[in-house]
Image (cartoon, rainbow, N blue to C red; front, side, top):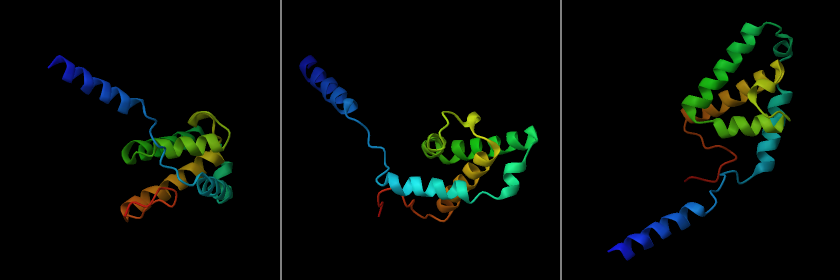
Length: 121
């Protein structure tokens, strides 16, 4: 009985030690998408000097990350801009990230697969 339990624990530990796949089959496509999002930002977004608008953008981004599970995508965007955390992004980059995440959310609403994820069907 105890030997059986020990083998089950060993099997569980062996499965837990395996690396988890990232889900990003095509990182080049994701990089192109992020670069395009950074270029497509409206020019008025970079001229937002008021902290309240910055807080509003950060709140919108936070809600999208929380409610739609887009933490990994947002972190990939942040790393692609050369920053380490969300707070290091400037207003233009925050606006680009917000628009980029809005496209992800829209795809989720219409049940459209991500172009970067492996085929799910």
